[in-house]
Amino acid sequence: GIGVAVLALQDPPAELEPAVLADSDELRVGQSVLAVGSPPDLHLSVAAGVVSALDRRGLDPAPLASLVQTHMALQTGYVGGPLVNLDGEVVGVTVLVGTERLHGPGVAFAVPIGSVLEVLDDLLAGREVARGYLGAYIRTLDPAMAETFGLPDRRGVLVEDVIAGSPADEAGLAAGDIVLEFAGRPTHTAEELRNAVAATRPGTRVNVRIWRDERERTLRVTTGTPEETAADEMDWMGLGVQTLTADLARGLGQEDLTGVLVADVDPAGPAARAGISPGDVIISINREPVPDVETYRERVEQIAEASRALLRIHDAETGRRRFLVVRR
Image 1: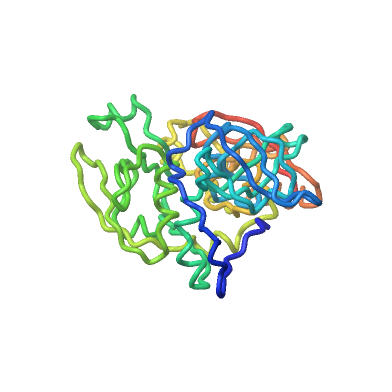
Image 2: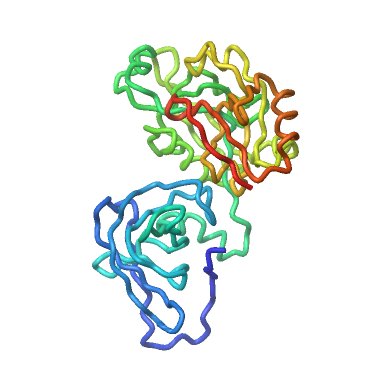
């Protein structure tokens, strides 16, 4: 677990001064930061380092979160402690100290304080933190594709397909639409759109500004929760898949692509930890092609007792094919 609790103080000491919270969106790679924690027998210690990367994803214990990666020598006693800038303002909460085997020495991760504030009302009210769901396969629009669609500033998120019966489908979103703004937040990249959708509670009605037929339009979308059927059909890797149709393959710009489309990913499952995302296409398992869902399921069942599997995928975000290992 992350090791953080929300507490109410009764009769707090008069000298107790709340920490100042900074705008974590202002964090920059290379910026100096400090971590405060309590390693064993070293109560209230401070460590110094720098921000080495932003928007790291797919890492336990917060697989859905956009994490700040830092370079500093931390022990587990810093987990749950604040990450602060040199003005002493809190910019994040340390949630994971990297291991030398996985990440190399001196690597740690923190949830940006802005992400904490987004769910604070739910935490204070004792409600479960719920993330919005759209139900569309998306990718960042590249300049060549933007020119083809006649988009003036060439920035937006391309909808490659829409799941039948999803909130996106019910709102009229369609393949070929380009999302420019979601709930008032510009969406220049697929990651920005995912963040904007996740920041809304299910059942929230929002405006979505799109580019269609060389003009802007506005749709009204009511966010939902992920399809239960996909979760019911998840395998041991934490994947729900569907047939890759010819239209979907063309939408990916890969007419000769064969495999199965990843429809849903368990954020805490082995596949998510390996870096697989909805919209990716699984081409083979242990070098054996999986051209359809039936073959995929047979292959997954055959290797169910194995501790790991070698997958070759088409990465929907980068457009490249790569190998990765999924471990239990």
